[in-house]
Length: 455
Ligand code: GCO
Image 1 (cartoon, rainbow, N blue to C red):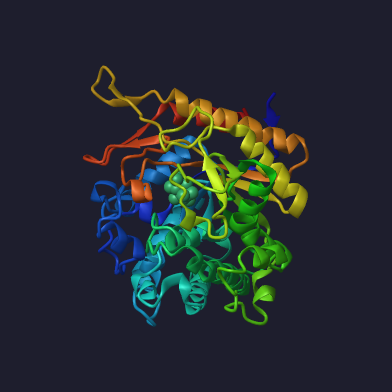
Image 2: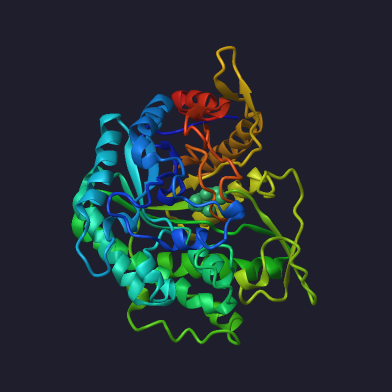
């Protein structure tokens, strides 16, 4: 069954600055923690974002692709290293101009800008002072958010404070997968709190500039676990409610303190922090790809890439192999998980939702047409998107207030620790020529958008 969406529903695609821009030494940009991380052997094949899709230079072409696709909105991120390249210095006009051109270029094409203010590229100078372990980072990032909002104002449809704080805390300071790759398990809890604090401060800074002229949001990648109830409950507490409850309800659950008693005293929470964190937001963004399977265990094996350090406080939980089929990332395909997630968050928190990322890495095969041009028949990606849009539509029919759906990603791009080995784009990027080629999924999505139906 298909679901017709309201006129103001946003069909879109998403990208992030470090994954697409390249030009890392241009426009007055300073290095970020991801430049350092990728240049010091932490990514597959030593890949870096130095060139990426070169969108810094090819942004007009990318915006034309979006116009051709017919999206209502484009979710992209602003790089703090371009805006605040000097520690304690003034905003960089070249960086501001770059994003202003993108926003105006989108508006000229009738596309609403959805701006993520922080998608992981923290300036290295803040990384050098402890990054998200240092409370001061939250204030510096909020100051930067105010600078961006002052410039772009209500030309932006939605400001998203943070993308996936789970990744910028647990995966970065608990685990070793993301920059700075500290790998110290429970030492990531202060990063969790400082990211929550940054969200609240950023909301205040943006509202202070734009009032009600733009929507405010945050994007979370909630971990959808299936399996034995106690294990599901605990992983939900550590990975999800640690963000949802302070942001949307103004408190950390007592259970969280009980479950982590031996690991952390949470003394970094200061008086008044929770009031700052608990700001009204207009929409909650959710990124969804797959589900996990967990069980309580005396001898956890952690057979999956999820390791103990990434889930501090879950040392007695095992991550079990998931049922197939799996994507090229090894993630299981479970559209029902998206339905469950949307219904659960709506039922419990009653906040309008948007799917801000959903998509699939495929081993795309490149063929040549009669004129020697590249073509990609990515039927698997179309099936994936279809299944998930259907699930999202079903959630809407069950009463979930869903405001938008964004495909990850417009372009093949730098997939963090996996470098260029994984392709999520509905547009192929040839990394030698940087040529863009819409895949079959692009044409398919264009048709979906035209019908204004969730398949
Ligand atoms: C994330 C990020 C994206 C990723 C995408 C695929 O969710 O990790 O927002 O930057 O590239 O999710 O892994």
